[in-house]
Figure 1: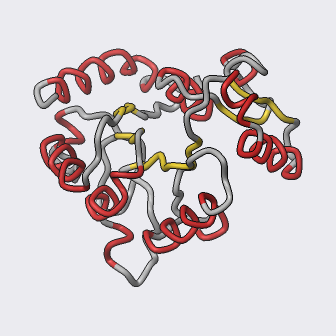
Figure 2 (figure 1 turned 30 degrees about the horizontal axis):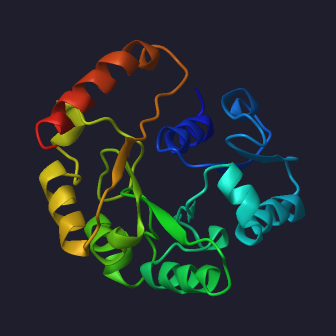
Length: 212
């Protein structure tokens, strides 16, 4: 399963309608006009129009079970919202004229690693300042250099900076209410990585379960 398809199923598991492009395994995972809207790939205008439709059409939004929209802050400038301040600004803009609230989907491994502001490469700063606006948080083990979508196994936890107790405490300090934590792990579609998928998932779930 691709990481993009995993994101789609994460949002579906959280009961959230989706706007996505019809690429890869997304059409298989998403039923158009029932669980979300599908648009043609490589068509930014169509994607923008679909999002705009949900923002402006409360009847369609209700049909899809839409309570709110989310966007995910990324790590590079061209994808927007790569810093905490830029994310706050974009969040304010998209909510200024929308009939449906727009929230965040934070990722503990995202954020600019070239920003001059140390907050932007600190996952806990993101959680503390924006956790109350993020009903879904993607979790994976991460290093200071934001090295990848690592599992929560003993091998990676020794170097990792993502600690369940600290994540939960920081979200509580942010004022967050109900938050869905989604494991977002990525294994290369190669052997021997393929042989570790289930064991890594199991170990990661057991590791987090102790704190939830």
